[in-house]
Amino acid sequence: MKFFIDTANVDEIRRANAMGVISGVTTNPSLIAKEGRDYAQTLKEIAGIVDGPISGEVKPTTEKAEDMIVEGRAIYALDPKHMVVKIPMTEEGLKAICVLSSEGIPTNCTLIFTAGQALLAARAGAAYVSPFVGRLDDISEDGLELVTMIVDIFSQYPDIQTEIIVASVRSPKHIVEAAMTGADIATVPYQVIEKMVHHPLTDAGIEKFKKDYQKVFGR
Ligand code: E4P
Image (cartoon, rainbow, N blue to C red; front, side, top):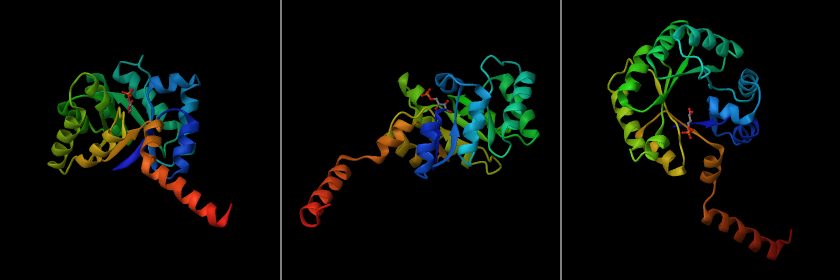
């Protein structure tokens, strides 16, 4: 399973990229709004940092397929080597995914909460589907069970090339469980990557090696 980072904060993206662990970036309108910067400029800057797929979402005020298509083309044009157009799961969204993918523009169908939605998005031509595990867990449903179902379904139809991005990840446990399902990618907030790095025994071990070494060798 690959890691994408789920943020529009360029400092976090640079730090995660320097660790060599991320293969792409996902953003959404809430994440970009949080940074308080120009929408397109932020996406363009991110695409200049990470050499991988960068998901930029059509604005949530864009509801008609024809408008999503125009906006999707503009997002893609920001950096055609990296940009992926993120489109919400609606009837209009599926129409836009169908047209953009026929033009060779990769799309990421977002806000997936059922296996049926994932299958529809795949058939419309989405390069990626993003099931939101955390938001399902928040309402006492099982987000990872949904991912398992999508992985199972897609694996039974080899003509489906759509990759599964496990989204709305809240904890290191989510990530390990996502990897066990065979999902292609997990998109992870920087804080969760940081949590994954640490273990109390790792940190204590580093301290002990340091003390033992310094007792004999000094600095
Ligand atoms: C990524 O594609 C999603 O937009 C993101 O993971 C949603 O996460 P949230 O549920 O924590 O807002």
